[in-house]
Every structure is written in C-alpha cells, then in structure tokens.
Length: 157
Length: 157
Length: 157
Length: 157
Image (cartoon, rainbow over the protein chains, first blue to last red):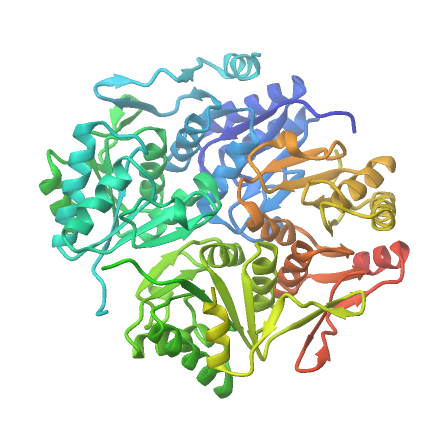
C-alpha cells in the first residue's frame, strides 16, 4: 500500500434519519474519491453511512470503537480499533484526524467538535451544532451547505 | 472519614480572568459548605479557584490531571489523579461527577459540557456556552445567575 | 485537610482467598497508620481488603474503577473514580502511585507490576509474581516476607 | 479492500538489538504473507522491524501510538492511531488483537503479555518473559523457537 491520504473524521450520531444518512454517505464517497482515509467511531447511523459511502468509492475506513469488541463495528469498517474506553475514545478519533466533518449530530458529536476545536483541528459542520458564548457565535466552526463543500473545506491546505 | 457528599465537577479554563476566578472560588466555597466534594481537572485558572474556595471552607478537592505527574496539580488539590491521558481525562471527570458546573470556559469546558449531556448528567452553566441546533437553543443546560443559584441547582435531588 | 501522605497502590485480584485477604487488610491498616493514602482498583478481593484495613486505621482510600459507575466501588472506598476505561485504568492507578505493593495476584496484578516497572516506580511483592528473562529473575521487584516489611520498603525514601 | 485477515499484535521494545530486529522483521513478513494484519505500538525497534517486514510482503500495518502525533509512527506504519494516552494505549493494542506475539521485550512488553492473558487472548513468546507464581511457571504463554513457529501458533484456529 502506498502512502495513504489525509485522515478525515466524520462524526455524527449512531442513529440517523434518512437525510443525514444519505448526506454522510455522500461525504464518505467524496472523501474516498479524493484519496482521503475515513476515520469514525465505527458504529451505526452517520458512522455507518460514511463508511458505506467510502467503501462504494473504494476507500479505506477506520472505526475507533467505544467497546471491547472489534466485531461491533459496522460492516463497512476495514480497520476496527477496540478501545474499551467508552466516550474517551472520541479523543482518539479527533487526535488522529487532520480535520473533522460533523454531520447533524447529538451530544456525542458536540463532544467531538469541542475536542477538535480544543486540539486546533479544522471543523466543518453540516446541519450540526452552533455554539455561542457571550452572545456571539463561534467562528472557528465552518458551516458547509452540502457534502461537496464540506469535503472541499476539510481537504484545503 | 464518614461517607462523603455528592461529587460536583467544576469545569472551566486553565486561565481565568479576575471575574471568573472569583466566581469559581465562590462556587468552590459554597460547594464545600454544602458538604459536597469538588471534582475538577486539577490545573490552574477556574480549576484552581474552585479548589481554593473549597479548601477555604474545609472541603475535599479531587483533581483529575491530563498529564503523568501528580505534582502538576494546583496547590489546593487534595487528591490528585495523574491520568497521562490528555483530553480523554475529561471523560473521567464527568463520569465520576453527579453533576457539572461550567464556569465561563473555553473549548475544553465545552467538551465537558457535551460529555455530561451525553452521559445524562445535570449541567449548570455560569457565563458559559450556549449551544444551538436547528435554530433552537438546547434546553438541557441550566443557566444560573450566580454561584448560589448554580450550587442550589447542582445539588437538587 | 492537611497535606496528605504518600500514595501507595495495593494491587491484587478481585477474588482473594482468606490468606491474601487478611494480608491485604493488614497492609491497608499499616499503610494508614503510617499516614499514607491507599490507591487501588476499587473492587473486591485484595482491593476491598486493603481499603477495609485502611479504614480501620482511619486512613483515606481511593478506588480507580474500570467501569462507569462510582457505586461499583467496594464499601471501604472513600474517593471512587469512575474511569469507564476497562483495563487501561491500571495505568492510571500506577501513574498516580509513589510505589506499588502487589499482593498475590492474577494477570491483572501482573499488568500493574509491569506498568510500575515501566514507569520506574518501586514495586514490592507479597506472594506475587516472579518474572524472568534470559534465564534470570528480575531484580527490580522487591519481595517482602510480610505486610510490615512490605510497608517499610514501600515507604522508604 | 476485501475483508482483512486476522489481527496479530507484535509487541517488543522500542530499542532492539540486531537479533531481535531481524526476528521481528521475519515475524512481520510471515504474518503479511499469511494474510494477517499487523498491529503494534507504532514506534521503533521491534515495532518498526515488524512493520518493515510486513510491508516487504505487501501487508497492512497499524500503529497505536502513545503520543498525540500520527507523524511519530515509524515509516512502515500504514494506519497510525494517535491515542495521547501513554502506556494505557497498550490496552487498546491488545484488545484489538486476535493474538499477541511478544518478541524479546522489556517491561512494556510484559505489560502487553499480562493484559493479553487477562483478556483471554493467545500469547506467543519469542525470547521473551517467563512468569512464575507459587514456584510454577505460567503455562498460558506459549514459547516458540522461531518466527515460523510463532506465526503458526498465533494463527491456529
């Protein structure tokens, strides 16, 4: 295997509605077409959709699981890592990523957004959280209109 | 030592302005007066202020440090835990807490707020983040006007 | 609370025979009498026995748990830390300790002995593992005959 | 990428003498030839040698790093995971592996052997630790004479 491309984490809830699922799948597909490697939490919903899209485009998918069993990964994960560290595994996903794309998302996704900002990684959001302090929205999160734009921003030098 | 009181995590940045420092110190003081045990990240700023306040009122303070050395705790920490797990240690603080009070805060604080919401713990905020999705502010975070109110809410059954 | 004493980790299996239980209890008692703070994995068997002994002598006990619930600590733990990090929590116990006393022990105890040696901490063993490479027993582990000797060695400057 | 083969962790010190280096390299080569995926700690010495051998045979290599930077992996790692969790990352390597081959080894290797035994994984040793309790050597560790035998045992159903 030649040197692999950039690592992009796709973060989102383990249960996804049809719209988020398709959006994440498209993100995964575009990401693999661009030669990037997909990082995620390895489970269902948005994570599964992104892995599925990446595999449809022949990409490599990595799932960093919260539990102790590699077999709990969704069927589109190539490389499953069993951390047995619960929510602390989110720190590992973000540490390992070059940038993070948040798709929709629940509180777990917010954890990953916050960690990525804390660690100085680029964060692109699709229908995800907005965060505000002292009456002003944070400008570090970059909001994309669609999967194409999200990918373009995530992969920019 | 008899059975200890509830564990309240006080989360906030390692650098604090004078206002946040005094507010966190007051939270720590009230918390100890109420018989609660202070949990925090063990470092400076808001964490130090809360520990200092708690010690002024004779409380017990626990600091869950990101690095490998117990000696890096602020001087008001009684029980320092050296995790050497970086930001992943935030998950341990929140897991161990009965509820979380966020004071001001930077991205690290947002991580702890998000993890607490994910884990189903009560979150009280003092001049801290507001989070919004689909145009609506999250109603799980409870905003307090001052240290007294924050404590009252954090300790409610 | 004034400055606390040295932190001594007592490591051993979650199920203990009567002999190991009494030995660990005595270690805990002597440790507390010497003003040290007991660190352990927070569960049953040797861990419970050491905590029980420490409480009988008025000491402070800290339990670093593998699971997500503070309530899973044995009844003699004062300060329970819920890591939800499974076996990785052994690294936290050892990092936080000044020295380690291994009592009997199964494979988990061997993990803690190995980590302590790796981290350069003093290791005292009571009826515990001997380790050998290239036909020679390791001389870094110090074997004590009884609880008194174990404590004396663990607390030496 | 089709379904990947079994995951075999190769554990050993970050500094290796010429003999251990060549032995680990051969283990990596045979492992990749057998279609297995190499898991390791991602650093130098035995870890580098195993990755190098695996790449020489066209295999896939995964490095679970202790620090925060993916770039600290040795040049033969395909998929680097940056845990920033220090020695606790050893638990992740072992959890993710189907079986473990220990090559030579220092205390860190002993940690991985112990964790693998604790987690019920098969452990094969090449010039590595022997462990003894109550005067008897542990029979769970399987000692191999050379890389071929180690691989054969590690991959047995």
